[in-house]
Image (tube, rainbow, N blue to C red; front, side, top):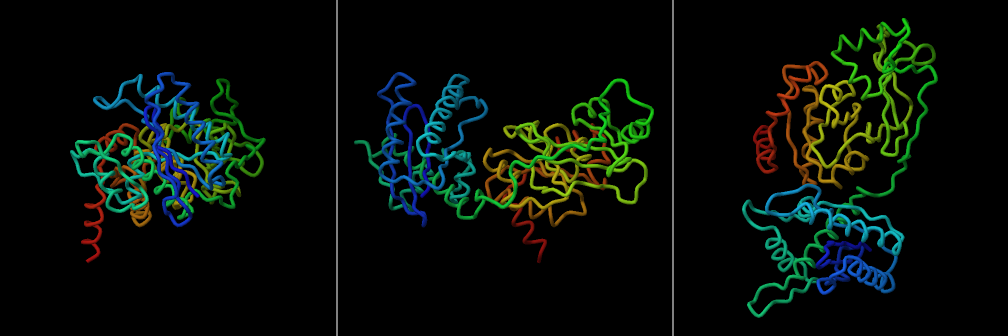
Length: 396
């Protein structure tokens, strides 16, 4: 079973779906009568305990992700703070009572996964409740004397959307457990020497010259923790480490600066990691590029794919979808098929996508930071329908 929650300090919607996606439970937990923030939380706790007694054994719990940024006319800073705190409390209650760590889905992504399209200029809640009325028999709607849906019905409908989107993701194995070390930890070679230090030995000169020729600054070296190896398996190579969200080294890339026939020599470890997850902000625009040197040019909030295809099951893809992160795609021109597959996949999960034109350069790493910044400002926003139509016409 899957539980979907639309958390609010006024009314929280809750929906339970069975393995086939059929509605087992759809209710609204009204906390408007409680003025105290913590009394509201205590009432939600009672409801979750009740659900656990009635059903129990939830495979997944999905919660609508609270607003991350202020939007004029929609929310105040105080409201955002209150909702965020309440969402955090409910998340903790779910974890403690149901023994399940909740996943988060943004409302726009959830609606897209359910096939609900919101026309421009139309309020989403009205479209959602009409969709639920037309297509979901397990959700009942009550009306006021003026024949309008009661306020709690909107929350019931929204919780169904979250549960259904979670069911779709879980059925597609997007969040299923994989045979991969999600907490991969590597040791940086003992021969590694940081180039961020002030007093560098003479043996570091060739490495410094190489980085300077590529346009890297001292600031880049410090931010990306760049160093070089003197001796050992990675002798004569620049080394750029990656750190997980918890601060552990989860991967590293090495590149020769002495003309070795093999430009890159990387560890025999899984590439299904988020490169420098420790420093990425998934609430802001994220740039996807091919390699680490591309990411350095693209700026701090950039993630290299490391030559891999971004699969539905990859950690990076999951985190983008969970956070509804806007994405800027800047892959190499010779990776057009890979780029097309990536864009289609992101659009399918409701992710906002912009495409950056990097021609006539071979990759982002050949650009200056100023050139890339300008190209990003000129990026094209991709509308799903227009993109699919264009690709279909090109195939004729």
